[in-house]
Length: 165
Image 1 (cartoon, helix red, strand yellow):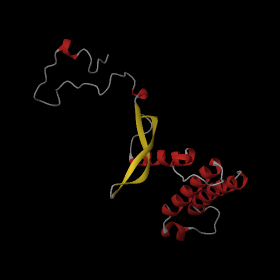
Image 2: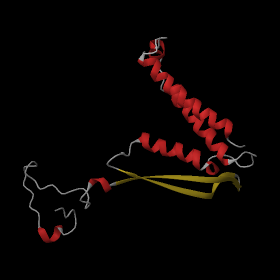
Image 3: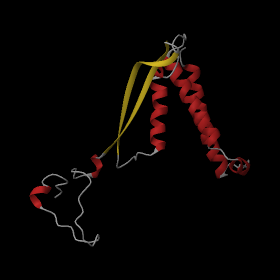
Image 4: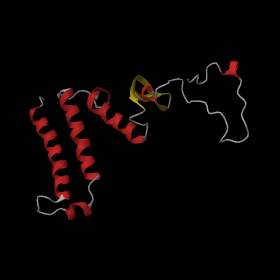
């Protein structure tokens, strides 16, 4: 049974100099690693330019905080995960990313953000070698892979046509 870092003072732990024989404390009190959580936070600041004296300064108007909680056992906390969270925010909380005053629905703005991200991903993850490897044979693995990617992009495009401005 794990006690983690609680009740350690009562136990008394003697650490041998041999690190292989040393007592290893668990990183957390949770018995089951499946409940470990990886939080990621995103802070978005809205500022306004003001002239004070002869200097231009930016004054904080608003700050929005967002926290994503992910199960650590299944999903780490790499920069890729944080970037995915940022992409999700741009699509679901358009109001904190875009300039106000346009007569376009937030749902449509969010869909445009997702399509933009999908197209950028398609461009950045396509190599010349892969494209040149595509053949007209239906069983060509490169052709099948590229067809899946284009099909997914087409689905997002179709959703944009049905979205309301």
